[in-house]
Image (cartoon, rainbow, N blue to C red; front, top):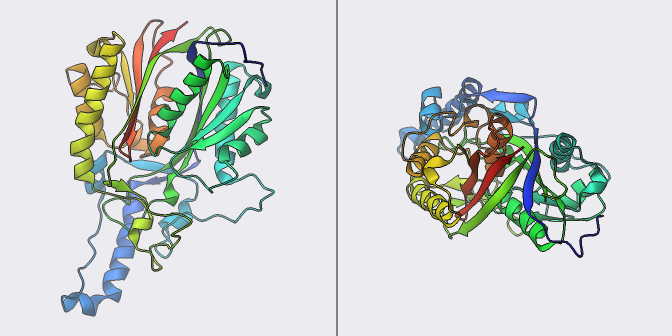
Amino acid sequence: MNDTSSMTGRPVISSTGLFTPEESITNEELVASFNEYVQRHNAEHADAIAAGEMEPLAESSVGFIEKASGIKARHVMAKEPILDPDIMAPRWPQRSNDELSILAEIGVKAAKQALERAGRKPEDVDAVLCAASNMERPYPAMAIEIQQALGIDGFGFDMNVACSSATFGIQTAADYIRAGNAKSVLVVSPEITSGHLNWRDRDSHFIFGDVATAVLVEDAAVAPEKHWDILGTKLKTVFSNNIRNNFGFLNRAYPEDAGGPDKLFVQEGRKVFKEVVPMVAQMIVDEAERLDIEPQGLRRLWLHQANTGMNRLIAHRVLGHEANEDESPTVLDTYGNTSSAGSIIAFHLHSEDLKEGDTGLICSFGAGYSAGTVFVRKHG
């Protein structure tokens, strides 16, 4: 581990990494599976439905999904069991405690890419933050397992602020740099969100996908010539039950048992839309003003990839006009909602073309409510 006891620094983003699962589920495939489940369910309960004792389940459609979300496909770690009407959930062989956990595995892949792109070795890194919405277990921390797998001599811990975890992690890493407690920090966000999704719920069965991202936050004094200056960060939380998941070790039942559907992801989508859009837009404008940045002059917005309608409205309020794909790129159509990783995927895939001095915004928002902004400027 580097000796940072007498250092204070200026934080920058040196590089990013991305792991994308090979398997992908199209809307057409997902709808066929879901509708098969619906037909079986309605046939099994035909008498109760006919007697008015039970409402029939409604089928899904490609048009419904794309209109509601803008999603056309999503990458997953276990396609076959998700599409099996008898299972409709990810499944993979249980790993022993001596094997690398699946969440750590994909996190390590993203982290290695970030290190390689920055020309870094594990011994150059001081800390690992695993910032994600759905941890595989309470402890040992996933961050420590990732740290061990990478061969980093430092410290690590997990943090969960739902879909805002990555931006909260970036600010935390930046604060370590500013305080002199570290000069190189990996923020890793492995998101196997297919595990917390109720694939039998028509209103949400299409939302989530799996992925892993990594962001290397470093002191500018040691960063590569080409990097992103972190101009400022801002975090905000406001309590709301409109996005919730009640699963936990004190309450472990699955929906098919006695626990009920709220042990997986549930949301009041219309309320979330109505309440989050103005909150996030105003937060961005206020923070830009504090940093003496003209919102309309932002070259690119890398927004949380949850819903195209939300992003369109937020971008319009910030930029003052309807944003095009160049100003606010979308990865939601092929990745789905990947929770905290979404804005980082957008940044990773759509930032190389910006010129030195261009200013942009990484922004996430989600359950909590929580929201995080990271204003950056291209250097080199």
